[in-house]
Image (cartoon, rainbow, N blue to C red; front, side, top):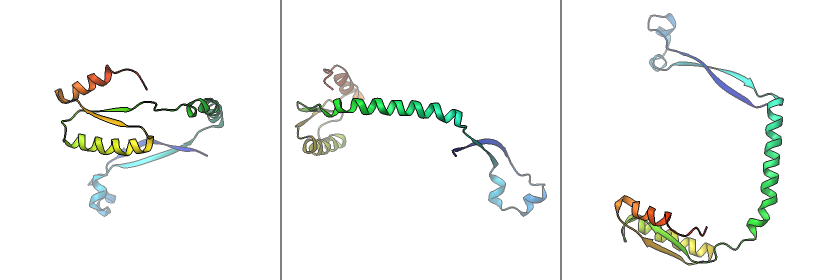
Length: 131
């Protein structure tokens, strides 16, 4: 059975109450929280299970087309928005080496500096939609 919790109430203990005198100092600062449990009914779970099953069947049916592609077919261009030799450039080149070894395609790192990264973002937004 799947259970969820609802927040029902919170109250602070009073310094004048008899329980507050016996409580620890940390208990005086924290709110008292009560939770109420409720169960998700079978009528709610059944349609969700049907939708989930249908969605997973569609993804499974389409997965063979994705596996048949030979991506990437051309060299990968990585755009870095910091100056050459900067920390982002160094990390980008290290990632490019590992990526090239994994994908067996060359990875070219280009630096586009200026305007707080806006020039690099504009260059990427105007590039060809090649995947």
